[in-house]
Length: 128
Image (tube, rainbow, N blue to C red):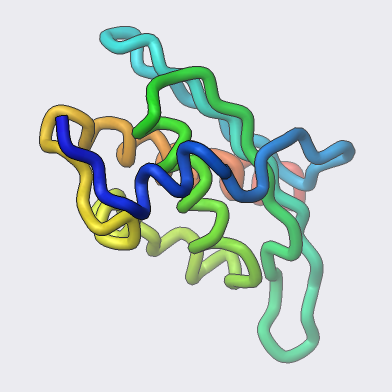
């Protein structure tokens, strides 16, 4: 299986890895077929001009190299975005930012965007 340099970089040196205490929102998803499990933590701040912005983001992932790399990349893509912008991030955005994933590993990028979207929904449900 061929991984891009970007995937290997994010797997060996993941960005934003770790728990955020008192997170504004938490999203957890898993894939029972492959056993990957992801948890995304977001801290949201209100910006007068832009609205609600993800000011801090972290993750915990139990899974393969692709799962860890996609978790790392989704945090880079979502950080400093408004909630609306972050909700538009797709699995294809994650795969493209990682310069591709092997087709058999594309389900990992599904988990990453799902976990982010779940964290945002968790925050929104808490602040209705």
